[in-house]
Length: 290
Length: 136
Image (cartoon, rainbow over all chains, first blue to last red; front, side, top):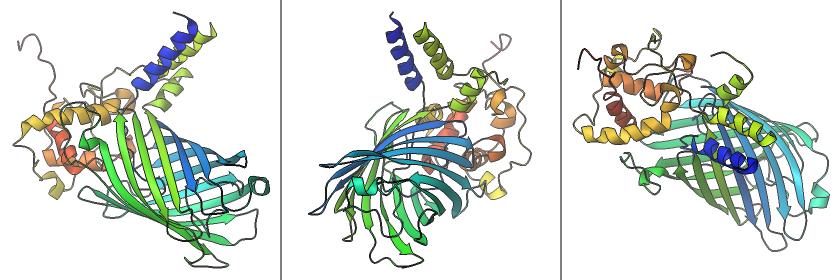
């Protein structure tokens, strides 16, 4: 076997031996479900904006590496870019986020604290959250693709389960330390549930238990300089996630803009691989005894 | 040569861990409340649903408890075949799956629908140590 083929087969084995992925279907709303400790999720997603007249369509892809540090602490790194039709393709920056679940046990309402450092510029359009009024969808990339700013973002995530339903509320505040724009606010609410409560015995791709459906609403709430929901982008978005195989999940969300500041249609796609026990295996490579 | 080295590296990451934890001792602080421990499995009269529980177990639990549920010493995960586990009530096992035990690295599996968690309990009940030659 040629070395290159051997590498391909090994890569295939790596992904096939990976596991389970019952991902939250949401793109924006966070729940209290944390990544299992030692597991690594690799996710590739895109945010696709269909514009109003006078604006250009855009595709904003991003890669996400999510790692379960402990059962209550999940850390993620994002790399993001953006391509606007008739304009250019640009790398817009990176983010590092951390989520910490406050209580070890399940409660009626489960709070999670979220802290993120962002090093992105004004051309960013992935819209992982809407803060303030929302992104600038009018200016060209050459005008927006300037120096990346330093921004800290905090969220209070509240998440509850009622029967098989998950109900989550996120409250966001963000401070851009490179601009004098006050503290910006945003929100996201989501509900979801699996299509089936019971698991069938057979292995199947299209069983109802492999699908989770729901909807989320998210938008901006202005800033300390101009607080309020008016003048900000708001979206309503049905969501669907499909556990394609034990190690991969596909998600789709066709969002509808509810205000003039939003894109009329915002379509999101996401594909996730989960690699179990990643941390332990990597640490073994470096000689850690178990 | 370089491709072989990369392959060896990837294989070592991909290879499943084989171990067991017969010396498992439960965390004395990890106790289900009495009301939770006394809950009956609503699927107890449908043992055929344990097959679905096996599928869920392989997706969610094998990583730490192993394919036979014997646990892994390196992960402090329970050997589910041990009497110390099997003697616990259905409600206790359900509560432990639901809440997890962050101190020992067991995550909460609340994201699995309730009846599916009960299916996992049904399957755990089928995990028995292999009979010794003298028993045969």
